[in-house]
Length: 65
Image (cartoon, rainbow, N blue to C red):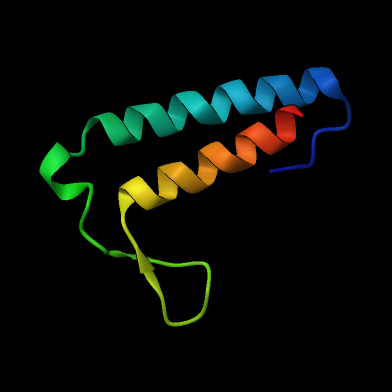
């Protein structure tokens, strides 16, 4: 994905990717969201879907500031 060049492109990219992520996550049963099955950001660590959502929420809040 190309880096958005302006505010409008950034807003479109955020909305588009949010909708894709929301669709993908809606298919995951709640009981699987706490299992550590994703590679973490630090070497040798694992994270859950819940951890991933928290991470993405934090980044989203930083972008909006």
